Image (tube, rainbow, N blue to C red; front, side, top):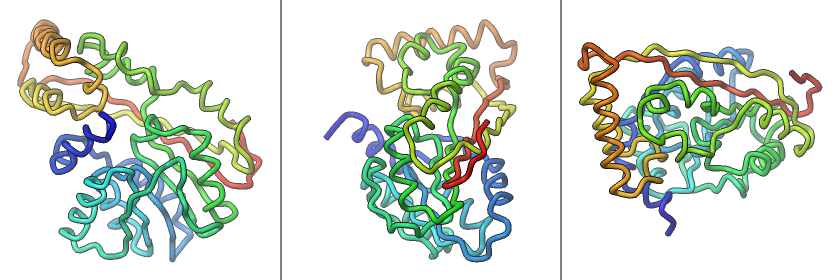
Length: 261
C-alpha cells in the first residue's frame, strides 16, 4: 500500500468537508452538454463524490460512472450520493491508467483536481477509446503558476518546492503530440475570491486537505505550519478574515475534432 493511497484512505470520511467545492465548472460543463437529454459520463478520480453530486443535480438525464483507485473513497462517494437521494450512478474502483470502460459509449469523461495523480497522456488515450465520436474530456485542475499565487503557494513554507506534479500550459499543449484522435478545444480560466479565518486554514493544513502536505516529514510540516501562521499574522490585519484568490482551469478535449488553440 503506497503512502498516497493511505493518505486518501485516511481522509476519505472528512475529505468533502475539508475541500472547497466550486459550482462554476459544473455550470460550464452543463452548458457544453446542454443539447443532450440522456447523457452517459464518467468521473475518474472522483474522491468523496462532492462534484458527482453537483453533476447529478445539474444534469437530470445523466447516468454517471464514479471511479477512483481508492476503495475508501469509492465507499464515501456511494454514501454521499445515496444520502442525497441520488441513484443514477455506479461507483467502482477504477485505475486512471487502465479505465476498462466500454468502447465508444460515453458522452464525456472528466476529472476534478486529480490529473496530477495520473499519467495524462495515458489517461487521454484511454479516455478516447471510451468516448463516443465528438465526446468530451473535461480536466479541472490548477496550473503550476496558479498554485504559486494561492494562499498556500504564497505563504506556506516550501509548498511550491514540495508540489512538482502540476502542469503548465506548454506541457498541456505538448500532450497533443502523443494522443490520437483527440484535440484540445479550449482552456477556460476561473478565479475565486476566498475568505476564511486563520483557524480554518490551519485545520485544513493539519488534516492535509491537499496531498502536497503529505510530502513533508512530520518535523518539516510542524515547522512550516508555524511559519505559515506567522506569515499570515504578518500580512493580514484581521486573521479572522484572511482574503485571497484561488485560480483553476478547465481543459476541454474533444474526440475527433480539428480545433486546437
